[in-house]
Figure 1 (spheres, rainbow, N blue to C red):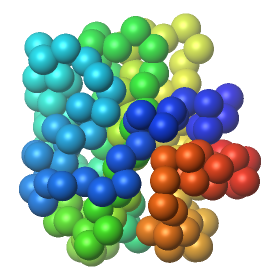
Figure 2 (figure 1 turned 180 degrees about the horizontal axis):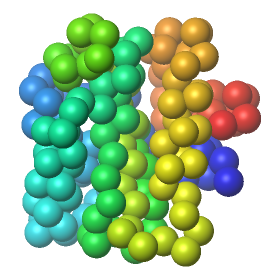
Figure 3 (figure 1 turned 45 degrees about the vertical axis):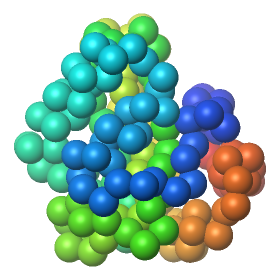
Figure 4 (figure 1 turned 90 degrees about the horizontal axis):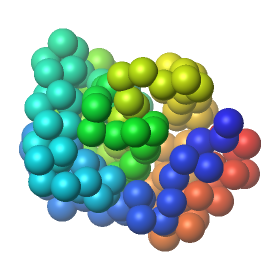
Amino acid sequence: MKLRDLFTPDTVKLEIDSDSKDEILKELIELLELDDKSEAILFKTLKRRENLGSTGIGKGIAIPHCRSLVVEETRLAYGRKSNGAEFQAIDGEPVHHFFLIVAPPLEVSNQYLPILGKIAQFAKDPDIPEKLLQIDSPDAFLTLLEERGA
């Protein structure tokens, strides 16, 4: 399973408009194109997860994630905020790159944790945050994932 296969150009947003954590989460959720009720449920679930501890892993990267009945299969989205946003990351720095993961509560393939690990591994590469800031299209984002074997 490759990360590249779990994203589409429609689930990549290269300039998040929002500045607050809540609004950023809502903007990421919108990329999944769910109905309004599902979006509201997903937002509450992600907020609950963030209240346990920020998903900002440092180096300008956050991986908000949760399990929810609003999806039937694992769904991913990527959003970028070039000038960064406060997200209570573990290093205290602004977050520029947001990788959203939503998985169903029970999934036969059990991809949720491996996907979380793959994104963290991809993001740990020292030049990835800078490369993500330089991409100019959703297709360039997908190509970067492909080039890195992610």
